[in-house]
Image (tube, rainbow over all chains, first blue to last red; front, side, top):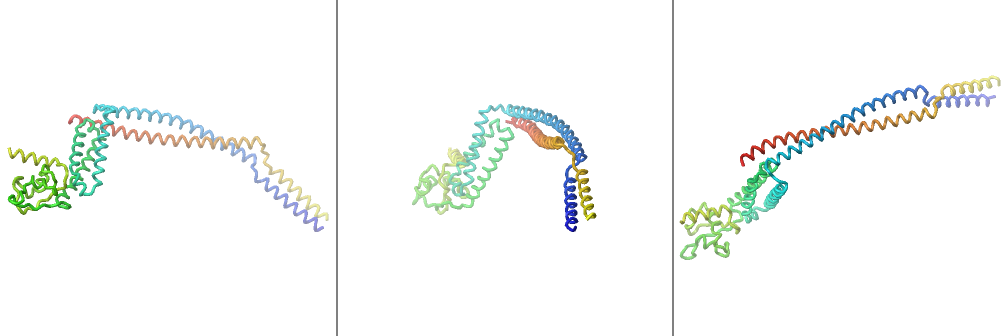
Length: 247
Length: 86
């Protein structure tokens, strides 16, 4: 009797559980609801897709038109300077040379920069020549040249400061003419100075605070001896001026 | 005994009713149709997303070109001025 009651209760529980499991499955109404929702979403997406496709096509043609206009503008810009692709390539090469040289020089110590200071004049010459080219009117190159000039000016300022401080510069005390035969030419000729008499304008230019006349130096003067290097444009100008005054 | 029998029968009847009343009644075709629709919607969503990205990239590209065109026009004016002075 008890067993029968027990079996009945277990059966009832199993039935209820089975019924519960069935109840979790989708009903026809739920299916229909989902189908309706998804169909509406699909239609909405299809319409959005179609509108987007047309927008993208329109934008693509606008983009292509802008690209063509830009190319035309750039071609016209180039035509204003009359530069051919070959000339531009050569010009860019020249600018690259200036850039490389300036980078090299800016890495030098003050002392090394001093000994290679003639190269600053050389770079200035390159920049001046590049500025004369019609391509320099193009903003791209114009700005580049302005930057190079700024960098060169900074190097010149460093060099000037170094020269004024007299750091690392050798000195020579002027002796008498009677005993030492000291004049700028002879001092420059001395092996321990330049071993080259033609470099005398270096001493002259490096001591303009003392020397007013290249032919007159006083015994006892302590002359600064700039590092041995080819004459700079300033030194050459001083030499020219000296010879002009002698005429 | 009689009571237990009637209880068991009652339980069986109720369970049977519940089970039959709550079954989905959906065919395999119905479920397939729903799955296909879901897949179609997912694919469409992806396509819309792709096109929206494309649209945004194109809008950016156009804005960039507009800026370049403006700069080019300015450059032309400046270059003309400088070229005259050379």
